[in-house]
Image 1 (cartoon, rainbow, N blue to C red):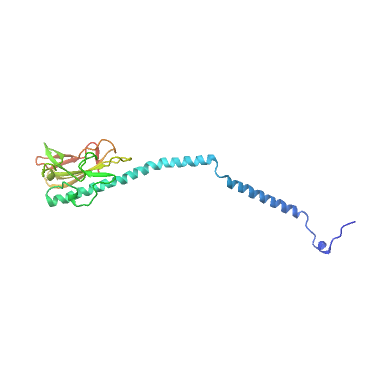
Image 2 (image 1 turned 90 degrees about the vertical axis):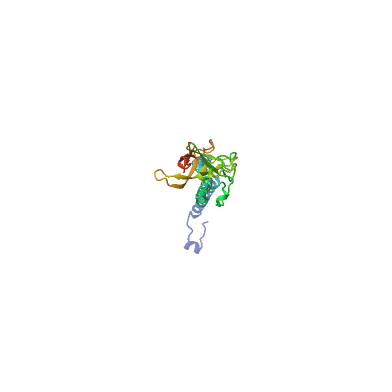
Amino acid sequence: MGSFKTVSEKLHPKPQGDNSIMKTTLRAKLLQHLVSKKKANEGFTLIELLVVIIIIGILAAIALPSFLNQANRARQTEAVTNVGAINRGQQAYVLDEAAFSRYIAGLGIGIRVESDNYLFGDGATEAATTVGNILGVSNAGGAGAWNDGLADGDDAQYETGATVFAAPADGREIQLRGYAGSTYLLTETGTNEVTSTTLLCEEDQAGAVAQDEPLLTADANGLVTASDCGALATEQ
């Protein structure tokens, strides 16, 4: 016996195959979702991680030396600034007193004579320096020699010139360069005019042999006619 169709079924017959197409589409979307979710959970492969680590290592190798050098220069700026201030303070001091100051405190410039990086005094190393003291210059055979005139009270040693050192503090992991600053009365050749002049010397190599005292050439009257930082330092 055949099946009977209602009037509604006759007027609106059901399309054939829609259910199978819908099931296929849903199955495809489900598979696509599962595959994408699996990929998202996989993360990086070992090779990809190794490549990233190598790139970071190369960048660090390039940037680290430059960073350390800039950090050292920043620390050394303290020495350059303070020694320069002492030199300028001595120029003002000699105008009023007709001699150079024996002590940094006597200049009234308010700098710290000891810090984590440097000690400011009369020696090129921490062991050799007396913090806060300044060397005076004496004339011997046309050559100026820096001497500590504090013990004997020889004021003449401070009438020609004075020098101070920025000695790197001991015990630091990173070695810093040493500095020396000199202020002296310079006799201009030809005119014989006397002016106060400054000299700032930077040690050529950090942690090497301590820099020499600045070299002076003096005339018979004890006035300086030429100056030099020596073989181990460079004028700044």
